[in-house]
Image (cartoon, rainbow, N blue to C red; front, side, top):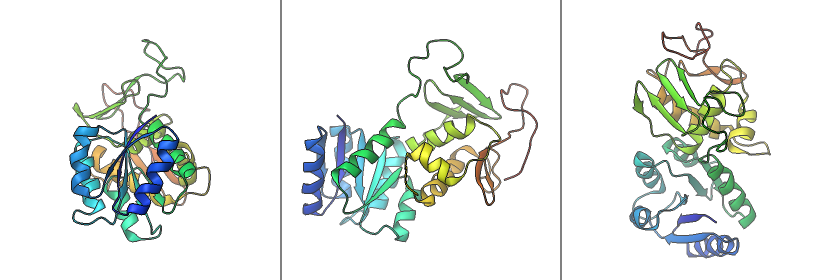
Length: 253
């Protein structure tokens, strides 16, 4: 069971989503505006936020930005317009996924579970040794970037970064195979768990946000690089004197 904060002004949608999720055992708190939704965060302490974009007063985009400024809380946008530019802006504002309304309870719950799995350690029983079951070290250093796979922490030049669940899972996935190129479709399946032909905008928006946090110059990325016509790869990152990185620099951004 998850604690879900639904920020939605449409009474019919609120009722439908609330009933569908409560039937599945989730605890739901409803807010009719961005302002009341933000106030509910500390009181209700949700595991996940379902957020409408078109809200009275504070927009869903602004609410998304304010949540993301301080919290790694998973956010899923509920949108009536799947091809709207607002959707792209919402993803760029920090949302982890989106659902086009109307959507069934099964679809909403499946997407919620996929997002929530991104904030759970993938190998919690791996023990206290230096490596996980997949053979990767728990703590890796790539240039100025430190990735702790056990604690799900990322630091740049010693300072801890606040990454959204999708940003963190994307970084963990890419950095597990430095230099290997992954298509957007493959990343959608592995990171977002979309088994259908999903929306590449999810990947591109997440990469843009991630670069803004981990790169010195997001326009000339060192860590998450674009391979035009194919997708994205991690590094290769120039190896520093204390780095566990893969070695000398390879391809460009």
